[in-house]
View 1 (cartoon, rainbow, N blue to C red):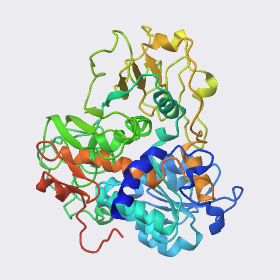
View 2 (view 1 turned 30 degrees about the horizontal axis):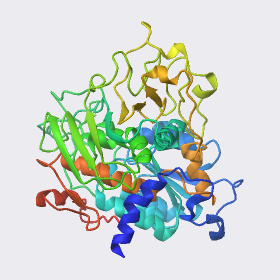
View 3 (view 1 turned 60 degrees about the vertical axis):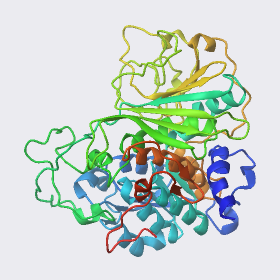
View 4 (view 1 turned 45 degrees about the horizontal axis):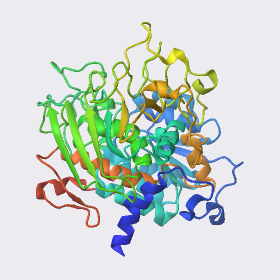
Length: 509
């Protein structure tokens, strides 16, 4: 029985890939039978996290639903959202919020540092609350297993915040590959310019006073205790407010985040995960890293994931590159072709809806419920011009036996290479349902609709293989993984990273 459960966890969940056909595959019964809200009734949503990315998640749900409670350990970070919702109850400890406001809460957004995702989310699910948890869902593989177990046990609607899974281009990519447009996919290359926060540091600055607006103990949560520092004199990175651990910087620390993989792989590898029906890899290895540290992820790395055949799909190797300053040079790509993100005029790094200049106006406007993403249309405005900004180095490239497909950061702007092939291209017939938007997808599931596209039964297997890459950054050599036993079979030391350390006074489940 254990084998059957694990096989479904890795293969069936990935096969569904979160793009649920109209029939729902029968994977989850309608929640209407369990007494959930009608589609016309507003959800009462709380948020654990209110500053930074949490603010945009709150605003993504707010146009159609009620925001009824807010929690953040840092009043300064949360100030803008707190001002928008002056009359809403506010807390620093999410456990107290759930105890006091639980009767008025239907669903909870969890957008805080990675190391606290599972603890906060499972506390919510145990109380019957639907949860939207930001990517990369969790920091360790054990927590991913606990998350999906809790979601199924308490029969709640879930969604991981990898919005590219809702994009039209992600579905187009899957359907093009399934139609045999590029033959058997043998390699995928995926890349990012992250980290854009400090990594590879070798010294922790001296302690500094904890800001009066911050509850440092609650911020640490399950992590081992340590003294606070803002960075202090001589700290090399000031562009994030001079903070050492907080805000964006926590992503670079082993104890709090998952590095560049945790920030961007759930986006950039989303299309490969869906299109190639990926399960557990046979091996994972960091084949290059620069700027190593005892407490942080390296400044740059290259990781090789090897996957066996899956049904009729050929074995595939995925190469992940981070810390890039420009697009990777990949053998066989025609000269002058753009990979992944297309260059654009004006604007900075956008969300899932960003794309190249020249896109149809209708596609450029993302709905308030969540961005659906830019769709490639043949147009001379997409071709290189002197006025365009340098392309952002993020995206993926599928290399098949008969051709190549490239996609942007969030699976947008999916297109064949050379791009000339797109001039009169007709996309294959749709096999997958289309998303109403990432937040809307979750809200609909909370009210009794089909499971959301990146619900935890889909997200947890995806995150599990990605997190093997995070472990590979911390050990030397190739690691081989047994998903049935949840154990790395050839590297005893690496197994310590499968589960988190939980300090006294806290529990995950």
